[in-house]
Image 1 (cartoon, rainbow, N blue to C red):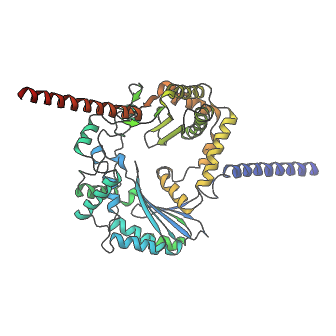
Image 2: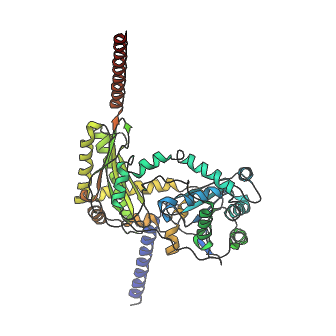
Length: 489
């Protein structure tokens, strides 16, 4: 009996060890495609409400900082959509201590680089620097965010820069043309149709022309508050020392309630009729065709299935349209996700004679996917491509910091970063079939034909005809003039 009991205990122990090893092995496999500890971060919320996220990477000798502010272009109607971008530019125009040029020299002298961008739903300020200068980097970011001079002179200088970035200040004629639907391409029209009730695509040019200094200051006062901001620190640093620096700088910003953001959810599309551009493109040598779909936003449970479908369809479209049939040079897919909606496109650039053939292939591939889904081998192949690309994408501290800034909305809500590798591994063939059927059936998309008003051949022919008409008119008028003069003689 004693031997039997020992045998049972030993057997149970062996089973437990086996199960532990199996679970550990699965954990290793699940994290194989992300850097060690990629999703494990430390976070502190300061007394004023600022979120601070730390990711310690010893031995890197560099430091990457990101300040994410919860404000983007979609927080504003079309006529003032450029305001947060305008403010972002102004915060680099100089402080009470340093001019813009002096700040540029200071950052460069410390071996650093800085930048910023304004997206649809966030604004992010970036600095990457040698880790020895961590205090300098934090103090400099703090200074530009709290002490920049938003003077009338700087406003006008930044306004000119923004206009140059957009290709020049739009004239009244150009704006009138745009407002009347002329020059809007087929994709823009399809987006307007799929997102009723919101102005993701504006009917007028987005411009800083009418934005005032008072408008900019109002955005700063409302949105640039600690409870609407996050500071992300990645790299080689001493945790308590850098936290103390953060508290002495960003921790001194007065606490204020976060603004209530008014990002509207689009309504239900009324129709899915085909769209083409109106004199857009005006002149081109070829065309583009595709299908555009509306999809859920990034909170959807379908996000990772859509990522895999995008990867799979991109390969299939390229293989069928470009490699096997030679109908296009760069066919593929694109997808965006915002808070309340997403967009998914399958497209191909084609010659005019191949429009129908390319469109047939696109519809066949989408219809097959919606009806049959993907088999396990196809799912595994598409998933592996995404995972391997992630391995290449997250190596440097800047890559880590950019990822945390881009995914902060999820962290803010859940207090952790979602493990993308695990979510991708969890997608099944049934998920793929359901998502493809529910979201990407052909009848739920808007077919887009981007055909130019004139080809180059037609344009040159038109010029030739105009020249001929002008020459004929000249000689006709000249002949009549001579005839009239002869009669008077």
